[in-house]
Length: 236
Picture 1 (cartoon, rainbow, N blue to C red):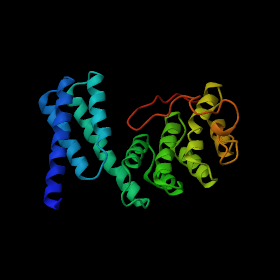
Picture 2: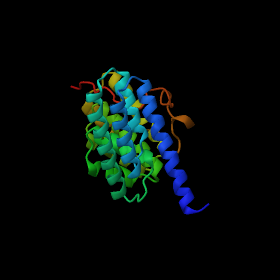
Picture 3: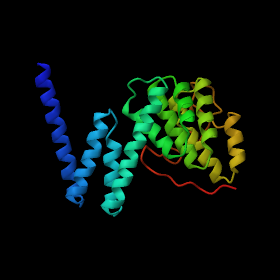
Picture 4: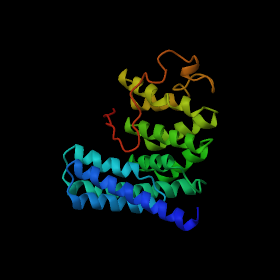
């Protein structure tokens, strides 16, 4: 297959995807002009190597909630800008071609109020890009619970530097959520995290491998995925 033919096939495939997205938006009640504007935002994002699924999801989310197109479009564009910023941070962390999931979770962390330097530190502490994505998801979830971004980032960094796996790290938001549910104050929760009480089992022996009861995957509130907002409770 010649490069010219391959290029034509790729262009045809992208055009089909864009037409499909436009039609799905219209089918959900979006005005045709708005649908085309969303398609344009996703096309620009794809050309820059950004993940486009979060952008499309945000548009569908706004429609499902009954928001008018003029309110949804600025949010969609803001998310695209945040994805650009997330990709820039990932590249600065040493990932020349960051996976889409890393870009999306970096964007989510920025949206939660984490600083660029905090995201950099999490990605650099992670043993692999996928682990970096998990680390940012966990940090963003801790911030959504009311924990300061700096403390959330430090918790993830410390866990990885102690040899924790990404799977073990996923326990952290469930543990802190259970402490809050028991009435533990925010300063005490932060203290426990930094003392290692949130992940008391040795590295390599997470809850799924015989850790303390109640710390098994799925036993706590779900971690918020990129693009999904979570409530931020009031803390004393």
